[in-house]
Length: 230
Image (tube, rainbow, N blue to C red):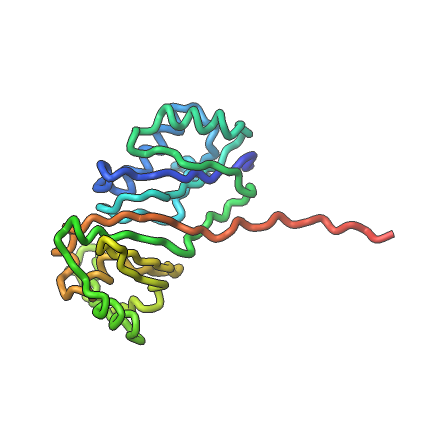
């Protein structure tokens, strides 16, 4: 039974932006275990702690706003919980906020994410008219390599337009992009940059990317008990 469910917002520092999502998960699992938190376990022959990330952060991207949800079997004051976790997490994973969620098993989903592509650091320049031309397109087809287990990569054309909310150039020339993921897929920031520059994504890996903000869907509202009229 879920006695308490919490949402933790944290940052993934630039120094560890190349660690994988699985490494990030293991870092939180170790911190929760060492902090002695009563985390709820999954059922089955291989029980695992209920530590859920709404979305996996792509390798190579730093983040100022990540989220993780943890289910507990006992209630713990938020200040105490934050102090215990902070003492066990690496310094490049600082916690920025913590709050309680309704004790349901359904995890939150991201509705919008904002990225900053540091073009100046990579020596890239995007002309404003080129960006305006891309935004005016009705479709943004992109040829993506789709990995298949045990087989060669199979190219797949995906339209990035439904995922693009907004894009603008900052005063220093960096590109700021707002994306909305769908349940089955999403666009990647470097894929949009590839359409703008004509360079392949592999060549654009030199461009540092930072996730600035992530908006999650609001938690479900607990059902209210109807009152009997007099």
